[in-house]
Image: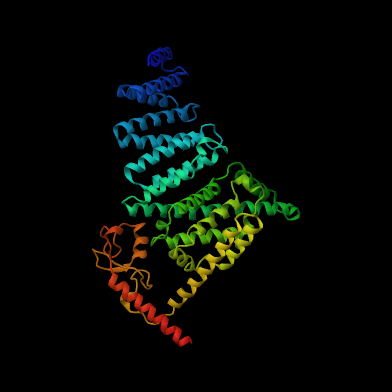
Length: 467
């Protein structure tokens, strides 16, 4: 402590010699603030922390946009504010810390020596805010930044140890939380991100592929106007020098899904989630091995962060992780937009040829598709049930209900999956706009039993007629 006290005294003297207007004053303010912060860590004296915050604010004020020390000053102030939040619990400090961490990371893009540190700092602050507020968007962003920081570290780095186990343990802890509704919203956000990143990545890769293909045909390329060639070449150079990041995030987010579904399955087969997840995975598989996959074959794909083998492996692993879940099988079978059994056959051929998965995993995928095809036959039979009693029909989507629930305010009976999906974007009863959460709905086991009896009887009658 004696040495630390002397350091603080020395830094105060140095600051006095660098009066306002001196070019090194911001640095002296930051150094003194760091020493005061270190002394606070040892003694817990809030006066030191308050002074440290005062000096970091002063340093930032002297570092306008474009100043070389601005990113460091933003980070230092954020660290000090987060420290005060940890001791006082004042959310205003944490919110401001997150804001400054964001500002710092914008000035430390990928390749900057402090980029990874900035990712770690922002991830930690977002996780702390989630712990206080339960806002799933903060947890989602925190996990993504943590994952990206690990990805950027070299193999063998100590922070690789225990990852992704630590990430999935964190995820499991939140699946056991009482607020299931917020947790479902978190999964929904992840699925939304995958959908968005998939579309943006496909657009970007297709654009790159088209330009590269045009340039390879020298005769056609030479026949186009000079202006057109310059525009296309400029677009390609821009994409090469400054990739958008969508492609890397696409793979990272799918990898998160792989880890999460390996850690726990039940949340991903919940009503309102499982159908959307199945459609998302089918869409990704179609993009990677479907008829248009040749449009993604760019030269030097790693240059753009595109690793198709890893992306295909992770996508298929999510299917494998959930392949023993009946709800997931039915959801894949019910996806009329992207699901095709040929995609899985094509995927199995690719993973065998390129040794992306083991032979037992390839066999497991084929067995999964066989179950999906059986489920499709069952769903097809339900499409031809004849006249269905009105009380068995979902009032919003006009399909047969399988798990009817009562909405307590409007007294409307609706399928659990339908109302769960609705509540992900709107926390009100769709029939009278009264506040509503999924915990409020009331199961109707008597009606559910009657619907099941009706379905069994209709299927039996259909089979008798067929025979």
